[in-house]
Image (cartoon, rainbow over the protein chains, first blue to last red):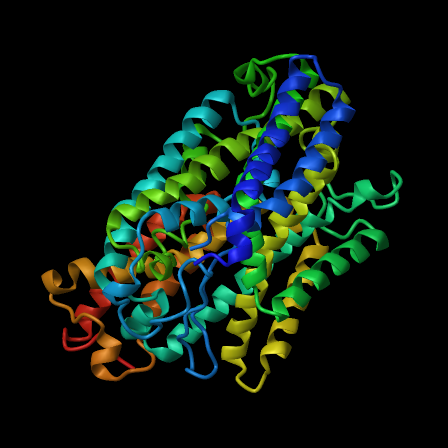
Length: 63
Length: 481
């Protein structure tokens, strides 16, 4: 059962989490397509990593 | 590769207490799992996906490159080998788990007796330590890029000894942190592993995508084709067998009875596909591509390789370093904890803290020496060869005992605590098998067999020997001691 706080943050956390996953995989693709330099890819991926671990506990289901 | 191996040890019980991840609870150690505790397949898909994407995947892909594996072997061989592993889980492990609904250790206790299971757990505990040591080694390579180049001399494939004081300190710090967390229990670590799983898989994928961008090609097949003249040290068949048996202890060795006994139906065994095809297919190939870049563009000798930390940092930066540390940490941590339990059962006077510290110390000591990580393929084969054969005993007991006229659960029926038939049936194939491998100090056979060829033959031999010895014992009871 979700706590009220967890329930309140569920949707925004899910959006942040999914965006973080996108931020982990899209920058490398942008690098391959030549639209993003590698340094920016690394920064984006690190920020996405922080965002993922901040958001995941609020919405990922644990059996 | 995974470090999840339940020891089933408890000094309070003498031996059998389930040590489980939160996914499967920590109950029903000495009784069949009841209907109310059964779980649907979704619980198992996430667990397998997370646990088979570990830090050591960063070693295995490059080791295939070192051994000159070709593109066909990697794409098709790994596909077939992983499929065979999944089928083994689905059609051998899961049906027994759903029928018996017991932990491996309780089932083993019924067949082999309590004292012999303690011996099995000693082997298990030591192998846990070396496996966790390899994970400490891999994690320690992620420390190097945080310091000026050359501060920490990184090990290569040929390294067996510590590379210097800075390397030793890195391993001690990382190993001590892992041991400290293990002292607190590993629920938090298991949670972090659960949350990390999808992100970790994408980091592996990102490493490969960035590397393809650097190489300005999308021809992965061409990249994975070794240049002409490359010595091929691993065949297509070898790769199939490695993929099939790198987790032999889990499937034919029946360690996953402890997990799959909670499955509502044997079809939950298909969940292992998540671990095999994400962790042991995509992640291995991605890791292999990393080293290929360093060989082609940076002139690295494939026989020496490059440490995972440097390669991953070069590809995706700090996110990759965090991935290496978390992947190693989440897998090594429960391994240290369970090794501690194994030692505690052997030495009941030891406190839980003392036993975990002892296990952590052995793990750190083995992690300092890169030999275990750098010879991971051999080690994984040895690990499977030693532990998988007990699965042969369980298969015989479950499927064949009535047909061949030997008792089921003989130790339980006779009240024996040490079934000599089991010891002989287990040890003879293992000792003969190991004597054929490169890790054996004495090889009387005149030829060498890769260790990962051996889990299946040793398991079959163990089952056959067990039947013969049980019959010789008179069919009354195989528990002859």
